[in-house]
Length: 155
Image 1 (cartoon, helix red, strand yellow):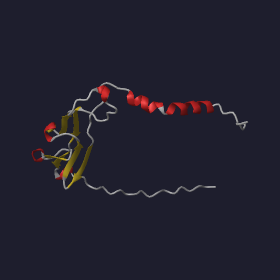
Image 2 (cartoon, one colour; image 1 turned 90 degrees about the horizontal axis):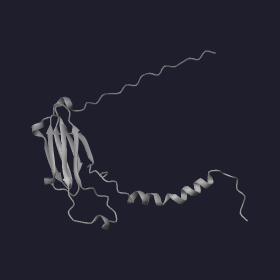
Image 3 (tube, one colour; image 1 turned 90 degrees about the vertical axis):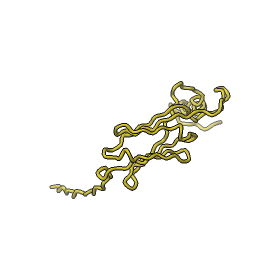
Image 4 (cartoon, one colour; image 1 turned 30 degrees about the vertical axis):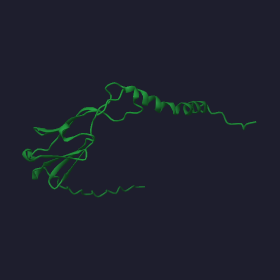
């Protein structure tokens, strides 16, 4: 005979939830949302030696597949990743790689030298170097601590 347990109204819900936990991830993996896949390469940017450096991961692409343009103060990196082999949709076991067109834009600070911007491609990473003007380079601002005021409590 089993031990007596205190009645818990949520015990049955917890048991049902545990029973349904494992099928849900597989269910959502199988759903196909048309148009939901977007190819958006990861981008990082930083300042080094007076230059703004923007790096975009574009694995599996060639330099000819990527365009870098500057219009006004907007840097645009765009391209298209094409599938190299034909596989029927029903033959896939798993597909996490996205194919198609992409476009990433980034505002550039005022005062950059547009005629000296360079773009290089190596190991699936495109790197754009934007020379910055002296007035656009970050300046460290010291942070001052305010003195705390003590409050006297009268009894």
